[in-house]
Image (cartoon, rainbow, N blue to C red; front, side, top):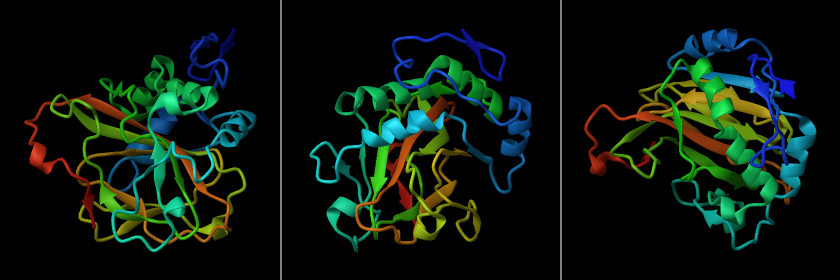
Length: 254
């Protein structure tokens, strides 16, 4: 039995022990909460090396090849200027992913990990979407980009839940900052870039997600052919306490 820094014991189980049953925050959760909540414009946080490097290398080895029919091609939110296999694509269904990747995504939605995210974000009612709708494994190749946007509510029951916090974990082990693809956060009126985050291996990004927290990676990626900007995405939700207007639930691209 092991203990991670929040003080809770971590006991291997069938859903996560095949990939990684431990995570290690670089400081106490209270300190991370202060950093998250005090970030400019709206809460966000960047943390490196939370997970064992070896575990993420094994996940990367399981990423399907670019021409696999398992991918859903989402594109950039605008006219594409790169080949379809290099535009943004993803796999949200656990059934279509390897046992190791699906097990790791389950870990990110596991109650023990989610409790840490609640403590960091100050959202005691945060809950997971186990369908991973719109999340899961994401991949973009040379020339690909993603327009700045604010998310729609991706929960399968948007009338009952609001999207609250996004988690992104970059698993591209050979990435260099010179390849670009930086993840950008923009102000609520989308007039000012407030953060540009290099998507380095084993880098975790948490940020508040609502209808005015704009983000994306608008500059075309400059990585070599055959290399891909690769990440895992998990979205966390809170119970909705305002009326839901379905006509408003679209991605807001800028």
